[in-house]
Image 1 (cartoon, rainbow, N blue to C red):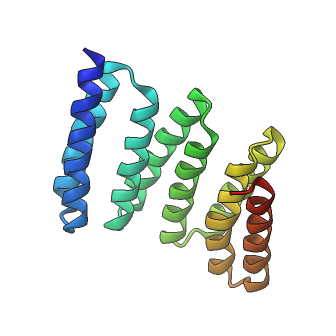
Image 2 (cartoon, rainbow, N blue to C red):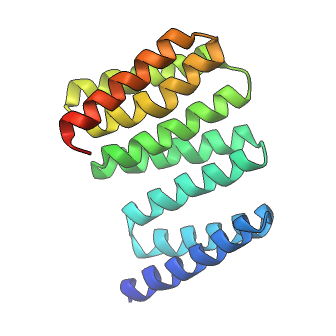
Length: 165
């Protein structure tokens, strides 16, 4: 049943996390891909999206920026398709981190600004605050724009206070 598939995928994903915690990224990636296949076969798009974002994160740990970007894009699309702006923000942040790792600061900044504008226009305040306090901060720091970095984090903090988060 699909419930069984989700349970198996969750257990496999946990095994992957154990490998990753031990620094064994290749076994972690293998296990994560197995979990991803199970979730895809069962049609669990939300869990699939989170595993894709996790795979992007694993690739970032071993400096595989290209693979991280691909996984993050797939995760972003999946999160967008199911209407999960906080998940979409996680995926965008992974993509931005990968571009920064490749030295593509200008591109990372463009992606961050585009996502920020989208979240603002759609009223996704939590996703906007999370993006400001993480990805935009990293972009500003990579640009050497300390005052903008501080403004970004202060804006994120004010939004969280307003949301009582």
